[in-house]
Length: 378
Picture 1: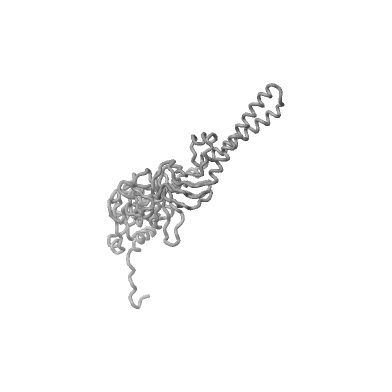
Picture 2 (picture 1 turned 135 degrees about the horizontal axis):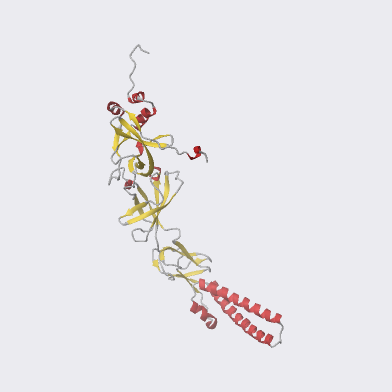
C-alpha cells in the first residue's frame, strides 16, 4: 500500500476572523452561549415539540372471530366495548350445515368401526392362510381412509367450538344440534359486532372483531419542521406516567396538509391510553449529551464538507470546526473544541463568513456599510 493511500487528512483547525467591535455593531451580529444542558422551558426546549394523534390497536392485536358455516343469528351474548375472556360465547347461530356436519361425523364413525372390524377379521384370516395378502392390504387401506375421514370431520367440529367430551359422546348419543356457538379465540375487548339477532350469516362471515389485551399504538401527525427533530426510538410523553416510543416514521408527506404519519408504541400495557382517544404527545428527549454542546441551528456555517461555529474573542471571532449531531428543537448538538458557555454567533453569521472567506484585513471591510459616492464623482 502506498504512502499516499495511507495518508490521513488532517482535521480542520480553528481560524481567526478579525472583526472590530464597531463592525460587529454595524452588522447586527449577536451571540448566545453554547449550552451543556437544554433549558427547562422556552421555545428552544426539546419538549416543545407537540404532536397530536389518535390511539389505535397494533397490527398484531386485532383478531376476527368468524364462522365457517352459515346460519341465522339466534342470540348475541356480548356487546361492543365489552371485555371477554378466551372461549367466551359471542353469538349463537341456528345452522343447518353445522347439524349436517355432525350427522356426517356420526355416519363416518360407524363406517370406521366397521372398517376396523373387517381389518381385524382379515388379519386373522390372513394369519391362518385363508385369504391372500392383497385382500388384507385392501382392508387396511379402507380402514385408514375411513379413519382419516373421521379425523377430518372431528377437526372441523372442534374448530367450530365443540368440546372434546361432547365430540367423544356424539357417535354413541347421536344427539345432533343445529345450534352453533361462536366463541372468542382470545381474551380482549370487543370493538365491533356486525351481526344482529335474526340476521342471516353467510359461511365465512365475521361475527366479532376483538382487540387483544396488550400495548397500544398512537398514530401522530408531524409537520415537516417537526420531522427534522424526530427519530425512531425517541420517547414521547402522552400523559403523566405514560410514555410511548416512536417505532416508525412515514417517508411520505400528505399532499393536503403537508404532514407525515408517525407511529409510536406503548412499552407496557396500562390504563393511560384508550382506543380511539385523541392525544397530544411531547418529545421527551434527553436534556444533555455526553461530550456535546447545544447551539442554535442558525449558528452553523459550512465550508466545503466541514461545519463551523464562530466564537467571539478579543480579536473578533474564531471559526471553530464542529461535528453536528441530533437536533433539539431550534438547537443542535455539536462536538468540537467548544467550552460550555462560549459566546457563539447566532445572527449575522453570513457577514462573518463573508469576512472569513476574504483574506486578511480587507475581508473585514465586508462588514462595513457601503459609502455612497459624492455628486459629480464616478
